[in-house]
Image 1 (cartoon, rainbow, N blue to C red):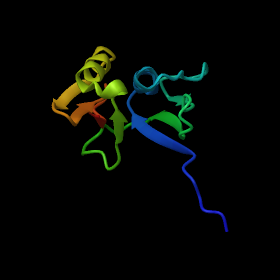
Image 2 (cartoon, rainbow, N blue to C red):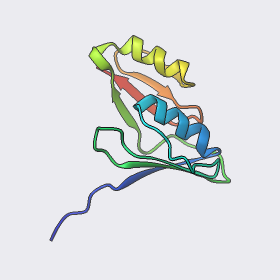
Image 3 (cartoon, rainbow, N blue to C red):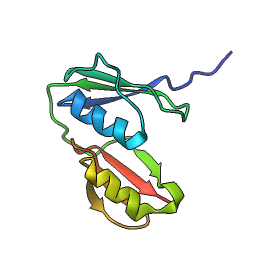
Image 4 (cartoon, helix red, strand yellow):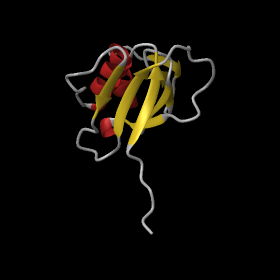
Amino acid sequence: MTAAWVKSLTFDCADALVVGRFWAAALGGELDEDGTSDKARMAAPGWGGPVLWFQRVPEPKTAKNRLHFDLRAPGADVPAEVERLRSLGATVVTPGELTVMEDPEGNIFCVEV
């Protein structure tokens, strides 16, 4: 029997285009042309990972993420990558060699060497 694999990761959000555009820029991908504030999709750009889906939900985020991305800084330059992500709309929660950040809607992720 073949094991299952991760086909996609889905982000619940208030605006799928805001969060989708951030992650597309952060990861070097592009959103599908038919994306809306209700739903958007991004295929993994060159890294062979799962598709990222973004879907509008009526309720706000109320607790810490149970799953998050750990991003590797290109060339081990964490400060430069953190600054690039800040320019895209992320905020720093905890700076350091392992920097904890939030995307535009408060979803936690980390940047590390």
